[in-house]
Length: 444
Image 1 (cartoon, rainbow, N blue to C red):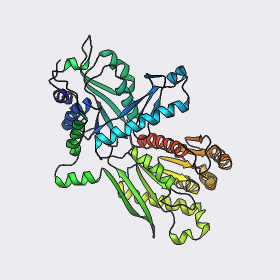
Image 2 (cartoon, rainbow, N blue to C red; image 1 turned 120 degrees about the vertical axis):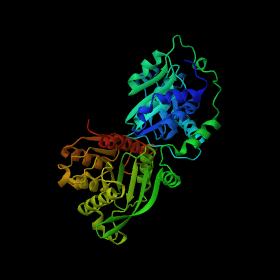
Image 3 (cartoon, rainbow, N blue to C red; image 1 turned 60 degrees about the horizontal axis):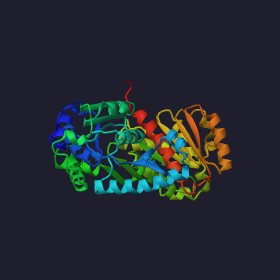
Image 4 (tube, one colour; image 1 turned 180 degrees about the horizontal axis):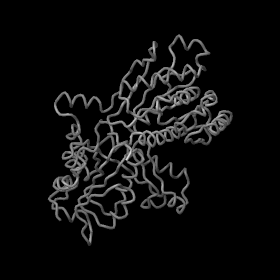
């Protein structure tokens, strides 16, 4: 089979993918040539189109030997076997990652030209390239999408050697390939026109595809564009009380995370805001709100009234579901006393909370309800926060649910050490993506 050009290949590929038209699909193209093929696929499926930018992490002394790959949203995939074989230390990996992440972010900004990344969590993602040779870049992209919470990954290419497809089958749910010629020497030999795709063309195609997958009509397109990432100050209704909050909902988000701050903090907590940004980058929605009014905060007893704080969190959850729909999975991220409130509220049988993450939390303050918690719970504690670590170990023993205690080495209570808060964000993101996405899946 010979293709006229990438657009021709994309149209032919789209014909084989039309069964996915109504399957909550996102199409992503590997830059640069893959985007030209992906554009035609996305247009035929009326699906959002995005670019998937990945960078290989090479062994410092042998850059051609990959020890892993990175993707957007802080995703990092490491091949432990290669790391061990090459004798690479964590400091070496960090140095390589820092350099490659800077390039990754530069390219992503260049290609998207200011548009937000399309959320993939909980969705079927079609990964498109103009062809495969070894398939190493496509494999890295598929693994990154898995880590970002994609429910189903479909690899679609016009042409590839059968051996490369076989190596990739363990990383994808399905493969669609139009031709697998043997012998196979190069992708370009199967195209009449295989002219290099410049960056400017990638930007232009992504701009033209901005309305794919959105409602028809000017009003619908405008509303959907505004909904790509809804980011606004809100007033949370908690019974007779009104509380200030900040609500962020990415387009196609598979779940929401409600933040419960610790004593002496608020919805403006820089540490919680840092974690919230990481979750939003992964496609999750977030709600940060004040648990107490200004007058209530003046009474120090309220700050440690876990019953009151838990009730406020429960009320905020019910309000949130009125705003975004009753079926949206919800998780809690609690810090310090806020973690106790999160555990307390998660025990409410009607809330159906999908996941809880505690950062430097005081679960001991929710002791009467710990045995009733059925929500998967991740406890994150700094290795040098010895008193709180001990309290979390005792609390973990009382939990009768899926749970894990993650200790961040060298970190103190506020996770102010270099890299400590990033570790918290990574742990929280993975926990929420796994559990909120699972909560959204239908029972088969």
